[in-house]
Length: 220
Image 1 (tube, one colour):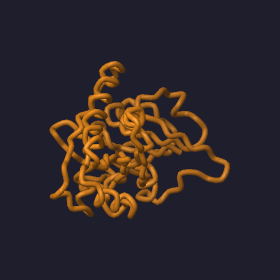
Image 2 (cartoon, helix red, strand yellow):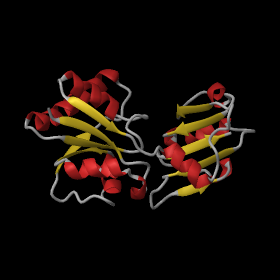
Image 3 (cartoon, one colour):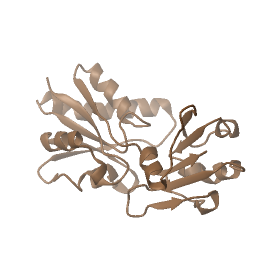
Image 4 (spheres, one colour):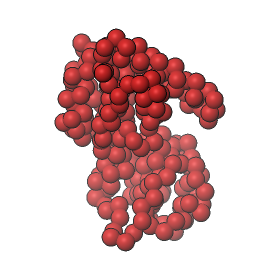
């Protein structure tokens, strides 16, 4: 039986891609690639740093940026069907994912659809943006008895005040509001971790109000 692989390509630096992920991408002839605004294929751009995709069949996946659950469900089904036709044709498919495929990833929705079609799925883990950001900042995410909270942007002041370290991911559009809520907490951030336009911030004041979607905050 053919298989869909959810391949994690890490936060931006091609050298952080695992050996297993590299082998899967080289072995699969069909590469499914999420496309963002402006027809950008960031996950593919990152993976291209260590894998030659010139002889591969590239399948572009256009995910919706909306909160309409019905529209999202319909689009996920259509994307899964576009992948299924290659599985039906006796070809394995590798779907690329930024960061880790199990964390705030659209892959989880496609995985369920493909499994419902009766095909096998395998997830290849990768380096998360918050682990890579902590390494860039040379800081520990937790101590022995300290909790760690992984939360998306646009959260309440109560959530940001939780005990322990808070990692706020994909906070771009909400960054200005979040900055206003972080009064007495130690805050560091990495914008576009591992990418050419990476920016490391050691205080709230250093974080751009119009920071990109790929901004990870570490609040301690």
